[in-house]
Length: 437
Image 1: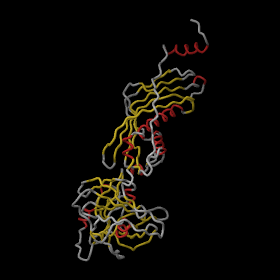
Image 2: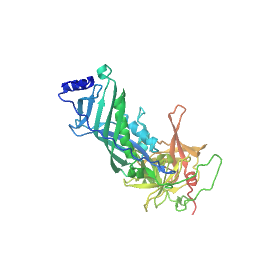
Image 3: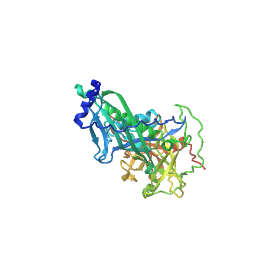
């Protein structure tokens, strides 16, 4: 048979060494998901992609590769059935970029060189496994001595899981498909095809109706006290149903071991802080920076019991937040509203460093009150550490005088032996909690 053109002859010749040209994998376009904007005023829960893996069926052909102008496949790649951890892969950055660009609140930055504590603050953790991958990759200039530029197209199937750090369980499973195509060869084109395809699959999850219901909190889900400019005061709505026990001259002394039963561990994402019970029907206090904008968090009592609670009020500037558990019969602390005298002993209670140390008690001396931009703080040399935040600080009678909030830092950024405590009277006033019947 006579060749009609040089191109046809070249194509036939390119197939001869392969004893029949290989076929490209079937790669089908996928419709773009309908990704809508969130409603104005919606509160968005923080999300973080925590894990990404790739595992296909053993022996499944995943890739064809061509090294000529006509992109005729000459090699194939197949899955070995092993699960590969892509935790450090740039695909995590692709997910974060897609989520951020579409109005999601993303915590954690995979671009950081060190562990980012922001990843543990998310209320919803995202995990995905690339269970199917079909790629046709071509290096059209390889036979001309330039092996770098590549192009191609791909399909990808990603099986997603969404884990609630509050409920401590997987709350949603979804499977999405992505498609990507690069028509013009470029250096690193094969990797770019993979990024485009994964981004498409990620948008499929971000557009999923059930996923968006998990992420978007209803407007007005928690009362937030208004932020005032310096020197400005305004009437706050009183939370009349929060009825605290104020310590008086005849209030009995509470042993420190019993104080621990009124302290709680506050679990948020993969991190934790501390808090304490102020009413028998389930109201508790902690720091704002422990819960931030979370609608729900989990608290654990000294006996190991845990329950999901709502964040019902918060004030960022004063760094206080009010929690509510649907429970009765709790042990509230007596609140000492008068200032602590300089030189008196104070006792912080909390979980310094690790959840294992829940209920730890330290001791220090009150060294006086200082005025800062966010308000008054009581200073002490009592030792606290990360995890104590929001925990109770009691006097020698076991009566609550404030909340642990921070340690002092030197000009070089090192911890000093100074603990800052929010006076309980100031915290209650800022949240609008009455202290008289």
